[in-house]
Image 1 (cartoon, rainbow, N blue to C red):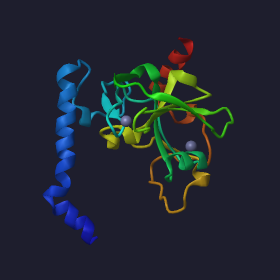
Image 2 (cartoon, rainbow, N blue to C red):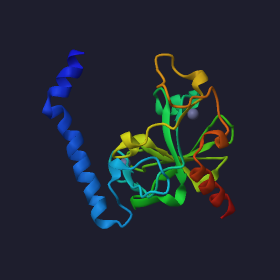
Image 3 (cartoon, rainbow, N blue to C red):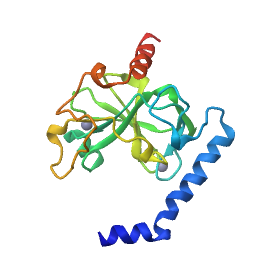
Length: 203
Ligand SMILES: [Zn+2]
Ligand SMILES: [Zn+2]
């Protein structure tokens, strides 16, 4: 409690967040027609949404040009191993909605639970993973690592999956769907995301 109170009251602790937001949002807003008041947008795939991100060394920079289809917080052992952490946070989005602003990530075929592999796109310099493609959806859909966004707080999980292997100290929030393994997208995705997926499959 002492640490939290101290941070909350210390302007030096909160300043970098505000500074980062101020530097990032207007820069995009000034040059791109889709931009709106980014922070205030409700959950609606049809409203303008832009989010910039990149790797640690900044050789890779990208921009999501719409809200993702759905955001997975995956607690499977494979994701835990790949990230060296407790879960992975992936925003699923049509690959043509991930604009390359700088650099070209390199594909690394990585073993996956399905046995068919997952292609992880990494910065050729710092090797940070920025997104991946799974065998199921293929290259048409990117699973963007939310942690590589400049403002990852904007994309909290829409669902927690594979919670059967959740590390027990991770406490899931009330009000967010959670399933022991995978799920039926028709039961959880918003209609607009289902329509976007259908359009992608027809294309
Ligand atoms: Zn890099
Ligand atoms: Zn996983």
